[in-house]
Length: 406
Figure 1 (cartoon, one colour):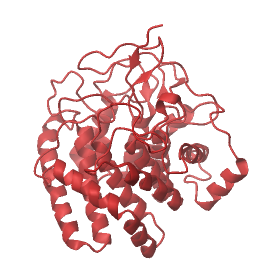
Figure 2: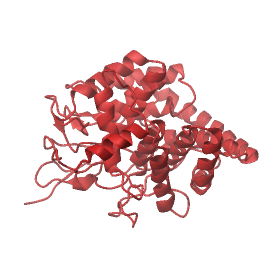
Figure 3: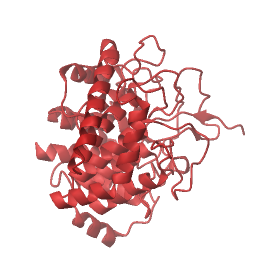
Figure 4: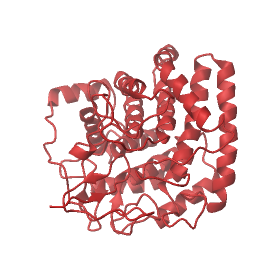
């Protein structure tokens, strides 16, 4: 039987699925029909007493509301996906059973925001342990931290996500003293990863080189999905340096962030913040990465970015009611939960609670029979791909947590 390959988005990978799928066409992402579900409901052995004790040690956002069960299940899924060494598996299916820095960063922030501070610190320590000598990251790692599963090219957005997570985890600590202590623990990760971003952007004086991003494909042109997380990382890094009392370094990194922000908006605003600066790119158009230019990844929601945010939702809508990774994604009818959850998260943090609730409602009714959020939803509304998907679970937790504060 000949093996074919399918390109998956989010925290997932190019996965061998036997005869199910299609080949990847040159210059364009093609996602073939997928099995309805790749995960058995008994993918892990729960310990109800330990699970309840763990939940009680933190808090469950949305308690008593319509999303309480989804958030509770999402937190328990994140707990089960997180290894003792802090590695967070993207999902339980074999080809997803690796740690992506992107997914790990979101998991760390969700854990920290719900009171599981030591678990969050453990996740970031894993990232500190596996980071490359230049402060950047590979695309994904074996869960034991012993390297990578293949020769896939590195993904530079991981550095930005790691820095964003460092700040969010530090800020979530319950006291100023605890925040300073956590920042001190993560100092090496902070310093080396900021150096990587500063080098990649000439201290904010140029846009970075093209790199693969969450679409998990090689890129000849720079994507918004690479540069936006690096910008978020610079702003986050400056804030943590300031908390550590390193004022000079904080000012330097903050200034680099302002320069990079000016370049990003200068280049991407004319296209309406599409995936690529050049709209003639076949798989271009509006992209879920526009969410990375909104809170909680930036300080404020700019009107032009919010307009692009709305355009993405219109252009990337799918028959079952969810969203594709971008307008240029294959028209296969499949909705993707990471991107849909990102929209809910950004809407909640940008003062759009009703928009956030609409997407959370959709995610809530398209869960698996045992309550986890799957990676995909087919055109007929049934779940597909691995379940749970940690990135989706984390983004939902963050969205509901923010709604609680409104």
